Structure formats: structure tokens, C-alpha cells
Image (tube, rainbow, N blue to C red; front, side, top):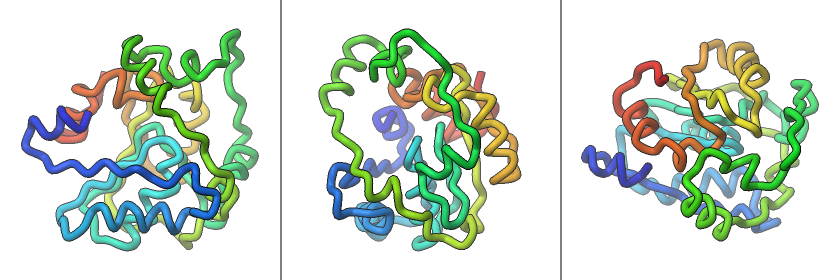
Amino acid sequence: MAAELKAQSHDVVTVDLPCDDESAGLTAYAGTVVEAIGERTNLVVVGHSFGGYTAPLVCARRPADQLVLVAGMVPRPGESAETMFANTGYRQEEQEDVSDLAVFYHDVPEALAAEALSRGRNQAQKPWQEPWPLDAWPDVPTRYLLCRNDRVFPADWIREIVRDRLGITPEEIESGHCVALSRPKELANWLVNPRQPR
């Protein structure tokens, strides 16, 4: 997806978070992003999945034109990621194959899914268990892209959370959880030209 955005003359910063470092919490995650941004301005901060816990922290530290969540978690103040699941009645839909390939990458091209799996790292527990530190969501225009075929965050579950917690109606796309890999061009075009994806 970064290549698609760069092809449209957008500067893109992809950040390698210290996800497998048990000493690094949410503040360290946000600091890593802020450092990577450098002196850039006119920011659109995009958070995917657990990135919903980091992206708003970045927007609280740096002026941003927009905050975008793509199949992202939506925390409340003081709510850890593991508590968010408990508080919202999360239930993953039953399926026979619960491998990472079947859950996360079921609609990603086979070679790309294999590459993604080969680069996987374990998620440390510290940021997962930390209370979300903001008192409120940052005052930044916010958009949400829901993936209708998401096997991690069922559409009916996350749709209600977005409406309840952000007060917005999510836009939707026919994709699984990893839309940046399964539909990179469509996602890039949606980020650049806001409209309802199909």
C-alpha cells in the first residue's frame, strides 16, 4: 500500500513498532511513531488493528489533519486492549481453521501471505494490558474503515463499537483484516480520495 501512495506523490512513513519488547508500552509505541514522523506536517495518521491504541496517542502529541482507523480497535480512556474485548462482549466467529493464515490472511495472495507470516513477531503483553492513557479521543477529524470479511473483528461487533465510541458511521470495504495486503490499491485510493469503498 505504501508503494501505491508513493505512486500518487504522497510521503509515507511506515513504522516498525517494538512489539516484541516487553519493556515497551503504549507511550513508547507513540514515541517511536513521533520520532519516525520527524518534522513532517499535514499528517494523516493511520492505525490498523491494535494500532487503534497508538494512533490517537500520536495525534495527541503532534498536530494531524486526520486520524484514520483501518480495522482498528477503539479504546475508551483507561481501558486496556484485553479489557476492551471483555467490555464489548467480543466473540470471534467460529471457524474450523484458526491458523493465522486462515484468520488474518485468508484473502491475501498466497505468496504475499507467506511472506507476511514469515515476518511475524510475537506481541508483548505490556502494551496489551496497559490502560489507554488519554482522557478522551483527540480533537481530530476521524474516519474508520471496516472490513466486512474480517475474521478477527466481526463486522457487526466493530460497527456498533465505532458508532458508540466515536459517534461516526464506519465506511466499509469487502476485505479481510489485512486490507493493506489484500486490496492495497483500493485502500490507497480511499485514503487519498475519501469515498465509500465497495
